[in-house]
Image 1 (cartoon, one colour):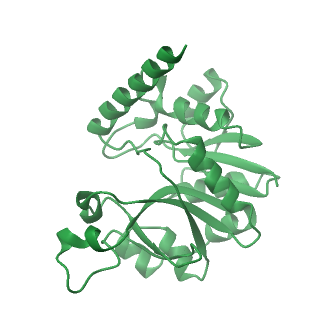
Image 2 (cartoon, helix red, strand yellow):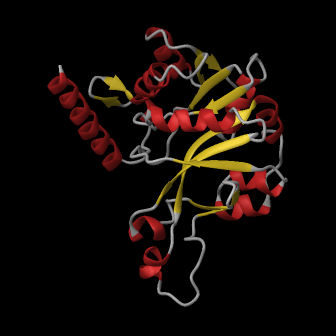
Length: 254
């Protein structure tokens, strides 16, 4: 199977303007994501999809493969679908432009999942370890069945415990956090990008609920990832600290 990784990258960001071009120890966030995808050696090609000439020029300067897309897309899924329509590829992996520390092991788990003939849409999840994350609306949770097919995504902590206080839910069960990395069979990606918004999606502000509401199955591989998205100034400082620690450890091993 031919596998393409596409990184949707836009310049606008409400909480952290132009974040994909911000510096993290001498490299932009977008450059780090692209190089991470290339270094994984999992993909036949890696493409940055953007509607920004500024980002496009940045890609050209660094010899990063990129394509200009429409400025009317409302989501990264729509943006990568436009690129996928022009590709000869069986599987498309959507890698977020603000996740520069995504591990090869996590990407490998997603690629392995997508190689199954039974999986048209795949994603990643990890076990929630803290009550703070469990109750945080910015942490998207999911429930899956015994075959790893996702039953629902929510910003709420799910499943609920009727007879146990919120703060003790982790003591009595396992909860999963959704990691926003997706894999698609190419034809299914193009199909879901054409769907209209749905009630559950608009309520939770989670586009993957649109796919579930329309009858698509999403499977989730569980990984032990420590990766994190960068949405705020605090996240950016954490990323710079993390990158410095990684570089230090590399130097120690030489």
